[in-house]
Length: 174
Image (tube, rainbow, N blue to C red; front, side, top):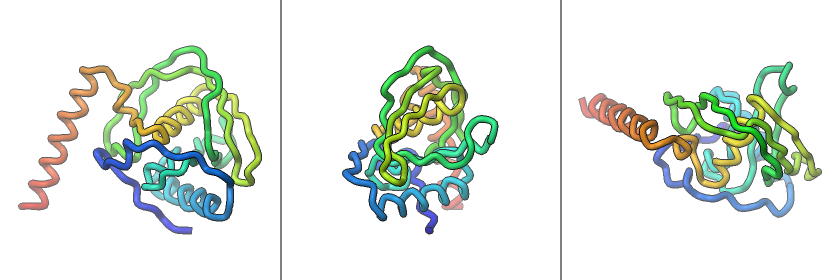
């Protein structure tokens, strides 16, 4: 297993749409293992392949709360097939470090995909699991959680990001 580089905003790879995986083979299983190791090391509770520069439709997540869901979930070609209810949840992202915002999401989702053995799985989720599934699937479609913010919150994010970038550049230059 190997740690992968997590791409951060505004890296163009984060805006690309991932391509469906034809079959779950050893290269996909290696990607899943490397993504899981990278996610745990970050530390995070979810990671999409696009965040590590791979344009295959693969996500991993682990809420690290045994009462919610035990252990690692890895999905290949995940698709939301049903969604209902509305909620707002404060989200962060390994690709947008240090920034958190309340995002509107579906309250409950049903997601279909393939497990690491290539078998179809269906996950009925609510709460944090539903939020993380939607967040990671968004990544596969080229969306970051900041893309779901209203105009005022998005402007606030952009100001903070620019200020942080200028501070980093001043520190490097100084």
